[in-house]
Length: 176
Image (cartoon, rainbow, N blue to C red; front, side):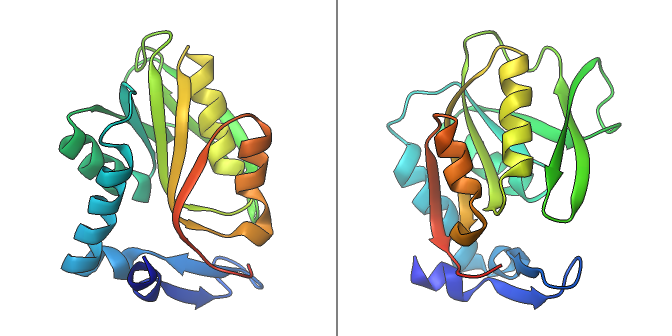
């Protein structure tokens, strides 16, 4: 897993001063690194019982789609507001550098379905908690949350755990 962390670049002061952005696009463009990332997620979840994988726009789409395909699960996109064509349910949330709104189709998840939520990174937890709330609004049950990167000093994983949900990350970085 240390090799995965080495393939993730840090972009200082993006999207604003003081933020150290952990960019997984360098990991995704590396064929072996991307394959190892998905293989590690497959190994983690291949024997787990859940119904869907929900990926948060945009990097969660890449990871979630590949994992859903490999595990034979349906994929649910958690999109930014205004991007889905059907009737949607929305959820606003705060993050470390502003606020945003996400949505899913109102019929994306059957009530009681177990959902693995995936994204590239967990920082303060705003986006992930927004997605959790959104999935629960339509009757989904969070099976677990998964990330490539955890930034533990920002406390997002702890916030999710405090809500009673499991958090898994392939690697972590110290600092912001």
